[in-house]
Amino acid sequence: MNPELINTLSEQELTAIDAELAHVPCKSAAAIDALKIVQEYRGWVSDDSLHAIARHLEMSADELEGIATFYNLVFRRPVGEQVILLCNSVSCWIKGCDKLQRTISRQLGIEMGETTTDKRYTLLPVSCLGDCDHAPAMMIGKTLHHDLTPESIVRLLAGD
Ligand code: FES
Image 1 (tube, rainbow, N blue to C red):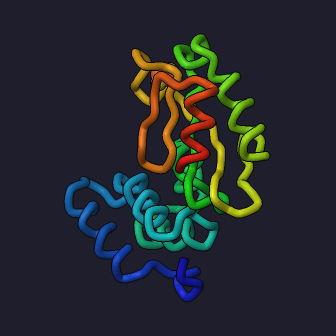
Image 2 (image 1 turned 90 degrees about the vertical axis):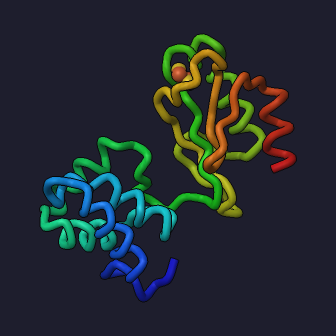
Image 3 (image 1 turned 45 degrees about the vertical axis):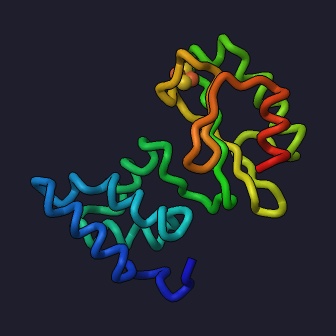
């Protein structure tokens, strides 16, 4: 993250957000895309970033915060280089995602919601990733992993 951009949006962010605005009927309809764009550039969406986005979309920061909170893939706290999104919806629950969580916690030394001290990984829960036929599933960064076992998790995290 570039610290100079704290109170404003960068040219690239504005260009990407404005490209989204061209496809929506009102500015607030681009809220999720705008949050995702800023997150892509900065890793997470700070309060200052959220206010800057809200100003650009001519909506209140509270309204945008509500959207960011509802959409749980917008990170409102700093996260590690890689975010592990462990699915905890029904199919994955039945297939033992709790065991996977314990394995990850043991291997990385973090609980759900925490970031490793080397800032490499953040572990977060997520609802269904749409891969229920191959539960349990999780994402590491942008890569979906499925049919997971505690053993495959150990290999994944060791070799990643
Ligand atoms: S319930 Fe986990 S991928 Fe659908």
